Structures are given as structure tokens and as C-alpha cells.
Amino acid sequence: MIEVTVSQARERLADLLGKVQHGGEDVTIKKHGKPVAVLISAEAMEYYERLEDAELAREVAAIYADPDYDPNDTVPHEEVWAELLAADRDDLEDAAK
Image 1: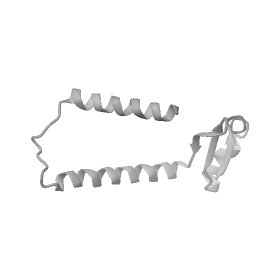
Image 2: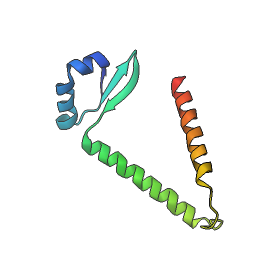
Image 3: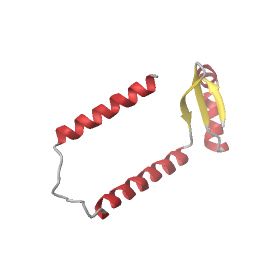
Image 4: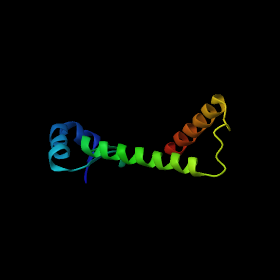
């Protein structure tokens, strides 16, 4: 994996894109010594998205297979949104540390 600073990435973007697209390289971009982004090929991104879809499908299948699963047991959307927003806040706080 190639590691570059933000300034280096800006200066070498065309070269780095070529290495990602044709050379199979991944590029980590760092700011103040910390990774902030990664350049990967479109094919790699599609692969990761398929992995996420497969994981989601496994999770849904596990829910349906649970003998305690009741499709009539619902949660109000306000409660779902509140939980999602709380999780996002927690993620942002963790990232800021």
C-alpha cells in the first residue's frame, strides 16, 4: 500500500490514480500523520459493496430464522431514527478522540 500526505496526493493525483486503476495499488492519504482517506479501484469498491450486501443478507436471514421472530412486533419509526441518530453521534464522538 502506498502512503502519501494530502499535499503529495494533490501533486501526484494522476499518477496515484493510474497506480490504483492499472497497478492494483491502494493509496492511503494522511493528514498530520493520520489516515484520512484511501484510494481504491472501482472494482475493489464494488467487491466491498457486494461483501456488505452479503453480510446484510446473512443478518436478515438470521433474524427470520430466529424462533422468537414476530413480524408483527414493530418499532415506531421515531424510535428507530432516534437510535440511528444516537449511534451517529457516538461514532462522531469516537472519531473526534
